[in-house]
Length: 152
Image 1 (cartoon, rainbow, N blue to C red):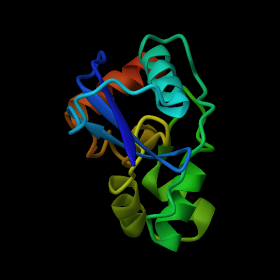
Image 2: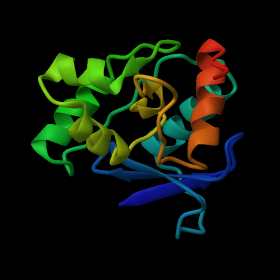
Image 3: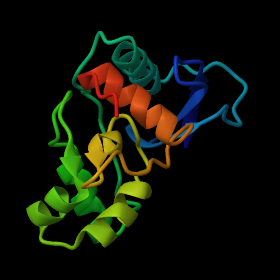
């Protein structure tokens, strides 16, 4: 597995690639201290930075989230359909795939590729809900404000 770490407007990010596909994105600096020239990783870094600088609304990257359960993969695939600048509730997401909202929340919270699989666009019925990525809810608010002037 290859990785690249870089500074971003939301903190340090490490992206992991295996077999030409992105498999994970994590907060913080990874274990690899050397500069990588892997085209997939460099392209992912570039697209994430463009997204965070509001110069990109759609990612075009090879993803592999097969490490999740069949249910999680179904939820993550559905999340990829939520467009930039729009939100969906856990309840609405559950209706789309025929599930109760509680397991939806669990799957969303286990998203291995945040930002690209836009789990930050999922809201609770009566508010913002939680966020397990980066700095938690403050990062979710930042991303939603960036995309759709969400200020709740």
